[in-house]
View 1 (cartoon, rainbow, N blue to C red):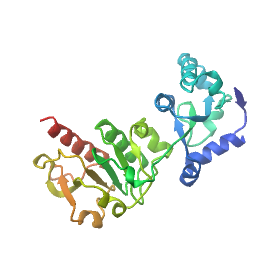
View 2: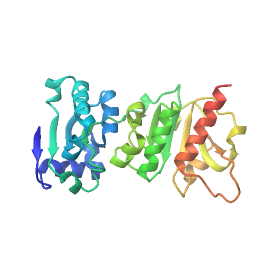
View 3: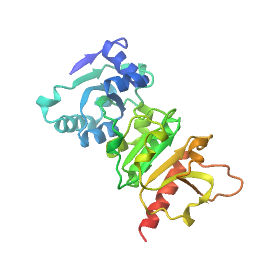
Length: 271
């Protein structure tokens, strides 16, 4: 295991840049995973790692050695694991990498894949379209909720936070590996290929519990604050569904609204 002793180490700086540069992530098809649990979840689903940065302070924990052995086994044994660079961050060096390390946690660089061909959109399951959700933590929570309720695919719209940012990945808690994720595209570029219903969360819609949500289709979730874009809200194929609230509450967090609507859909399908 190579020991890193300098904050100016070239590899460390490349990882830091990858964590902060969405265009670089997409051009390389690689993202940065923060924390033992996230790394473990990705490896369990066949992720390929190119680097693992291990803070010395983390390695002192009793469970750390077991975690490393488990990761090597999941990469295909020691010989294959050698294709991954294992780097030890000496002393408190990890604390000097802003935006990368929290609580002396390991960091990994992993390959990712997002779908470009809209023909591969599923026609027999639910799909989620993010209409400009800008907060990466909120977006990650949306992905986690979508995976929990069996959504098959997610599509980010223009202006949406990056699916592969460290904050989105951390909030999603491994959901990226359970969903088919598409590259950024406009709403109009794919809806003609969908035959099922198109539904959106909006306070002016019919109460969700009074709507028939059982058929699989496309859900549209609007941005924080702004809500749905006008073009989507007024589209003739889009039906609006509201979550009844007390009069003094203006709106719900986007991820919270999505969770309530997906649960209502799940509840109706159990009938």
